[in-house]
Length: 241
Image (cartoon, rainbow, N blue to C red):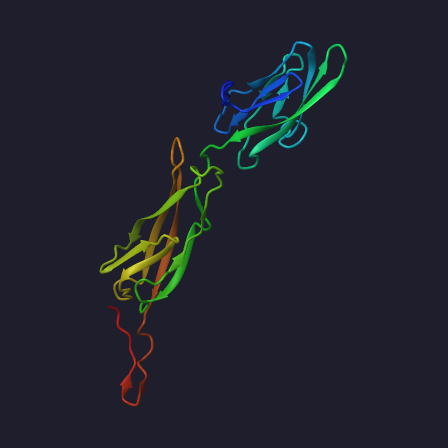
């Protein structure tokens, strides 16, 4: 069936009083057409009046699932967001034709995550001020990035510096494993009083990796705004190596 992964061999089967219900899986990536059949309850011919209740029916997300009361075929009516619902807890009911006895069975319908969310920075623009006397290796700023996708494959991402404007001389900005920006070399106010760094976050999701970017503005403060203080013929000053 469209949008469903099901296998009647080697898959978890649920049994209760001659019922066999395959594990239903709805693929979040499926975009239509709707409705489509996701699976069927396999029951003996003496069962009828199939019903379904719970999440996706009479609980949020409302109206997503329905069942053919005669055949027991379960139908998906619309798209479902895995980030809102990791699974749908439902109850199936059926009635014996002769005794009218009602049989009930609870099932979890799995929502398969797709890579539909890029990693996101907590801000589109970061801006900081740094004195030019700051020593290399110092953590300038920590970036916060999250990915709403649930699966490990889809929410695993890497960061990289895409560009630095203006191009630095005797200076290199780099990203550390803890998602902080550091630098090697010297910050020189006379060469540039501001750098704009573009940082990209990209996930490893399939079928297509998703990404987003942010800007980090680093304002360099002049370290020579104050005259040196002379005390007992000693001058205190700092050099960048």
